[in-house]
Length: 103
Image (cartoon, rainbow, N blue to C red):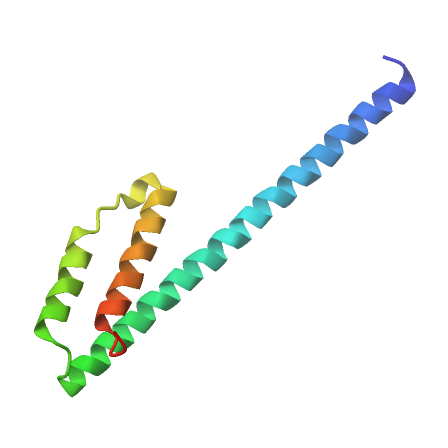
């Protein structure tokens, strides 16, 4: 390999390393934002359920369906699977809908 090709290869390796670090950081940022949004939805659900329980105006059938949805949630946190996050997100959305007064 001649000198210009060698320096180009070295530069390409550095660019690749920088790009991969950037991708890693971006992935981490997206993951944090996603988890933060799901956690926010869970806090909202907790607030809705607490408020409705305090006012004693949540239908028993709705409360039972929320519990069934929660009990049916099959996740394996140690595996770190995206499908578990999707399951949580879908379950929380369903429970928020069930617990809301706007149905």
